[in-house]
Length: 384
Image (cartoon, rainbow, N blue to C red; front, side, top):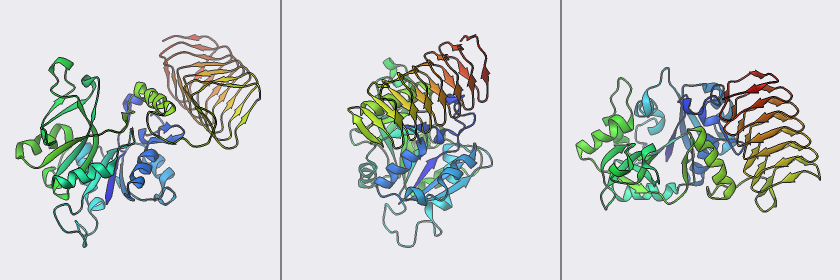
């Protein structure tokens, strides 16, 4: 069985983190989001994968290559322009279906079944169960659904008792919602789905194709998923996903050694004996943490970072190769790769510092400020 990862989008809701990095490459506990998706697919026996590319494609290709280092065979569908979710899948049709369309050995009503997933979600969904449900209904298309508390931020799906999809509601007000089942953009399709996607223009599953399937009366189903799922396409959700991982809620096994309950430290890291780690916390490879520094709770430190003496990092996500100076203070913020925070720099709640930024000594960046790549923050208070 094959799968497709949607990896072409810009990720504007995650800016400034995605100015230099495509959203499937945004790190989640120090691994690109797309790497977690690939691991999930492999776990369920899916090792032939296609990814569509448009925005900063060289980052994705350069990291994953042909997929052999990740236990899969990875092919790429390169788009000259964004074609929408359905249009992007149509462009990858030959890669998804193989040289002969359905595959010479495939026969029967579920021949050529394939999976499509977004490249910017974190999930532990049981794909095997979803595929078996799809096949049991002889479905043309099946959507993985997740119950949500706040329906106003999602495309909501209404089904009958058997799971057949009746209609959609796009981000309804809670009193108007007829369901609490959100579209996760985890789909299972039969090859015949391509007959419903127009060959020209930009087409989207939610806007164009799924309403058409309902009108045509084809076997179109949804299954509520029991496992963890989080769309990390916004800065707020990016933080939520990391908290869920560190709490154990996401069902994601963390690398490294659990030196104490809830404290994970990876290979090559040097901790001063007077440093304080407050669970839950994750520290990557070859990190140096100085005397009297405090890390956590709910902090993730990237690989090859340096955390200076008396620095405090709390509730923050720090990407790779970043230096945090002596006495610096990071609170509930995100710091990109290759940044340099000088002594006594202070970053407040909601601050997002993109790659290769410099924050000078004693500089204060107050809450909710977002700073583009390569900027230098002078010794003054930066206000939001």
